[in-house]
Image 1 (spheres, protein in one colour):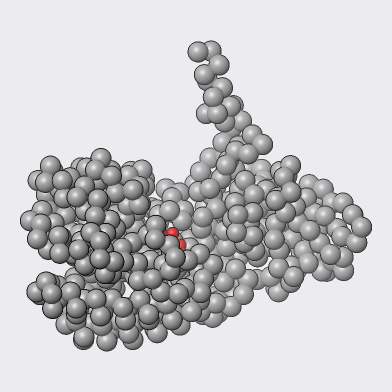
Image 2 (cartoon, rainbow, N blue to C red):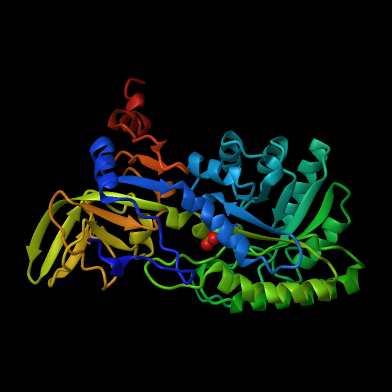
Length: 439
Ligand SMILES: Cc1ncc(COP(=O)(O)O)c(C=O)c1O
């Protein structure tokens, strides 16, 4: 029996995908451990949960997938077939989306570096909706649009400087992202808006902000929307009329990770009320976009590892698995607790338990919640980490010469296939410089 106390349940009552023990063991036999396993049906279900969450919005609502969370081509392809938008931050992400069957028409491009050659490149590849976040970026975008002879729909990324209660904050105190509304310098939303409105090659499209990740309290969205409303009304008084056609409220929808978190309906419902008032107040029924990475991709995926050793040390029992933070970096970086269970489970251990990885590094101890007693752990059994689909397999690294594990996928028909081949140690050797030895 599986230990149900470690099962993640969101307020919508929907648990993460279940794979049968028999399937997990037979995939382990065939592909070795560790391996990632994605459930395509869960990816799709997350899109509809988001759409339901914002269904009370009185204008058009579009889901966007933030590709940085998981750029596996099979994941992108599943989202392409859902007809959603893509939030991209690098030309290479655009290559992935186009090669996976996506269209540049569905891309919103938000650069961090905003260099001229980056803008030229993505415009050449067909992107026409770009978010600017600095004066220099605006100058580069203007030149790139003029060079290509195209009109670019330009969004302005604002940093509303609101307080965010979240694991990862992207607003207050993070000047790296977005423009202050009225900072006084040319790097302010007011100045950039004025320039966009006066530039023939740019068409003002709207505003963008991203407040953080794993946000459970909607208060920060309320504060940001209130500040944006005041800004739009005041900018119109100074610059004359302009239309807000799109508002992108960024990502941040939370994932359970073993505890209850608000669903998109809980959060979206609250945010939408205020967005509907914003529509009334500014008189524009803008298209609303929410660009999620974590929420759309995390719950679909498990990491399957094997117990390779068990050791008693003082009062504690140390369970060694063949995974490590090289395949789940946030466990070391953010001390992130993924729900974890032994398959098949057993009685919770009365001893204190530590779950440790294969790396020779003191950081390679997986944070586990006090509820995860890892009952039934024995050498040879599988240990499954849940909800690992976001910001994990994209950060796999070859520390200790570890080849990247395979990524498997259960498709909508329930059939298992390979979504990323295991990296062979010969290939890793060559990629790490082995093929330069003869130079
Ligand atoms: C601009 C932007 N949008 C969306 C996201 C996705 O955030 P999340 O994965 O929390 O939904 C991020 C994450 O860093 C981001 O930087």
